[in-house]
Each structure stands twice: as C-alpha cells, then as structure tokens.
Image 1 (spheres, rainbow, N blue to C red):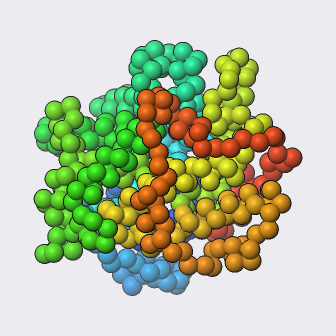
Image 2: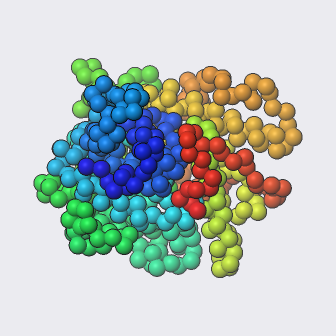
Image 3: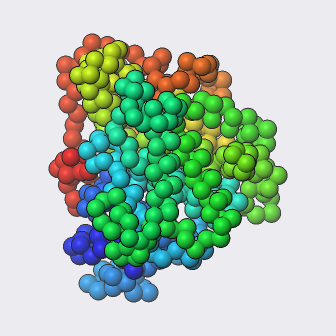
Length: 487
C-alpha cells in the first residue's frame, strides 16, 4: 500500500523522497525535514509518519513502486542501497494496523495544522516526530518497556501541536479567548491539542477527517487503536495524553529538575545505565526510577522528557536548519505581537515585539538557559548525545555569539569564524553546565509560556537597521523559492 500522495509525485520526486524516507536516513540527527516538505508536496507529516510508524512496510512499498529489486537496482539501472538494519518495532504487525488507516489518521492530523502559521504547522510536527525518532535510535528506545510505549510517544509527537492557532498561551490568557475560558487558563493550548487528538483517535469511517474528506474514503476509519486490546488502548491513551500535556513550556524547569534527580539517583557521570547482560536494554531497576503514577497510571517520564527535548531541539540542529527554524519561530511571535498591538493588549507578550527583540540575544539566551541544560541532561541518559548533538549545539551557540560580536563592532577571532571545523570540548561544556546557569524556579517563572521563560534572559535593543537574512539554499534538486507550507 502507498498513499495517494505518493502516486501524485513525478518519478523523479518519488526517487528523491524514497531516498529521504529510508530508515537509516530518518534516524540521523542532521535530517532536513524542510527539504522533504518541498519535495513531497507540502505533506511532510504524512510521509514522515508513514515511513516511521509504518516501517518497514512503507519502505518496502516505495521500493516496489520504484522497481527496486533485491540487489538495490532500479528499473533505470541506477543502484540504490537497500537497508538491512534492526527496526525499533514493526508497529503495523504488532498492533494489527491497516496501512490505509494509518495514512488516513496522519492525513487528518496534517489537515488540522494551519499552513499559514510560520512555525507551528505540519512541518514542525514532522520535525518533532523525526527528531524524537532520532533520539530513540541513538539509544532512547532502551528506556521503553514495551512497543506500546514507543508507539504511544511517537504518536504524541505527531499530534502534540495539532490545531495550533499560531498564538501562544500568553495570548490566549491575555485575550480571554474561548480556549482560555474552556481550560481555565491552565496549559490552554496543550489541553486543546490533547483533546483534539484523543477525539480523533475514536472517529469512525463515515465522519469527516477534518480536511473536508470522508475518513472512510480509503479505509473506513481513522482509528489506529481499533484492533488493540482494551487494556492496551487505556495504557496508550494515558501516555499519549500526558506526553502532549507535558510539552507545555511552563513545566520546563520542573521537568529538568525532576529528571535530573531521577538520573543522579541512578548513575553518576561517566557510568552507563545499560544492563551489563544486554547492550540494548536499560537495567530494570534503573528504569523503574523513571515511572511516575499519574491519573492512576504508571507513566514513563523518560519518554515524555525525550519528546519535550525534541520539541525544543531546533537550536541544536545542523546549519543552516537552525537559522531557518529561528526565522520561522520569531516570525510567528512577531505576528502575534502585531495582533496584540491592534487589540491594545499592552504591554506586548515577551519575545513578540519586533521593534525591540534582538535575534542574536534571543538565541543565545534560549540555548544557554533552555536547550543546552536539556541536552546535557539528556547526554547522561543517552551517551550518544555527547558526540552526535552537543558539538552541533556548541557550534550554533558560537555562531550567534559571533554575530553578536559583529553587531557590537567587536573583533571575531579567525578560529571562531571557522567554528564549524573546530572540535568542541564537550566534557568541559557538560561539567560547566552542572554548576550553571543557576536558575531559580519560582511561581512567576512557571506562570507563562516559552516566551515568558525567556523574558529575564533576552536583552533588548533599539530596532535593527535590517532584519533581512541570507536566503537559505536547500539541499537536493528542489529549490524552495518560498514554496513552503508557511506561505
């Protein structure tokens, strides 16, 4: 089975997309989901979700469609390397999910993301899914006690921002929106995302899929849980719902503190949480420390933390991805600020004033106070983070610091200008992070969203003379030319 969107691609695009949806390619930290979004016709969540949740069946179907034989030879004589690696899990077989149902589900989720949002659109959802998948492949999957937990957390990544209006929690509360009234000003958007996602899980075939199409047009339903046992459904929904709620940035510092306590109680820096008898499994006694009873059920907090890390990971992505994600995020915040001005919601929400926010300072602060502490802690849980992610994050931090120096007219060392080619002393960074920055979590800190968390750490300056940035040149054969799902 292949979705109809695959059949609508030209042969050249099918080959291009197939190469980017191999299991090995999707597991890489430097994956370019922005490039894929253009190549696949602006439905990246459908394709990434199909390739990850539907593996290996999705890859096999694409290979058959392209005439790839056992030796990796295409019908045109070109050689494509076929994969022979261990999959996290064959979810389709494990939970008896019809592939058309999976694609209908993904299609409905994608249609519930607003393409007009510069940042919170289906490309961000696809990026969160792929990033979480990469973390699991780097070693995070060893913290899952069952295939059901892996499936639940990956599905939560798919749905964690569905229906996002492009205006954050601060805006919802200050504008007294219907959503803020419904959810009593508490985790407004996260509660909405979770509610929409949970409802969609139970939709039947003749209901509308949210995009104007009948859910049963190909399969008869959207319910990917239909063939699970009742106990499996209950466990899935508990993890799924709690994982989405846990993406609320007001919980960030509390999450980090709690996870740090769990990790430090089990291991010390330099030791490894894996069982001596099996390099792929976390010792059961150690794994118990990451479970917490919530709503009467035992929830795997490690997996929830991995999803949160994936959600804030953009500054840790390879260049030029991290700069483009920055542009999209600030654009959405500035559009919110413009609306707040029109509605006289003054003062403007933090990070939303395009006339006073300094881009370099915003990224330096975000990395130092949010992203780096998160991934340093993650490196204690997934040792591969030390070599695969932290050096990238440090290079990106130097990039923004060097831009700041140029902005202030300060000299930039030649070595610093070529930061991409330098090796980062990751151990030094990790040890420094353990003693700083010293962040005090108080009621005020936990009362806002991501932009509020940054308020104390982002310097402001008069309006920049120009906010124009060098246009990114995409990899591969397809030039974006502003043809992305933000337009």
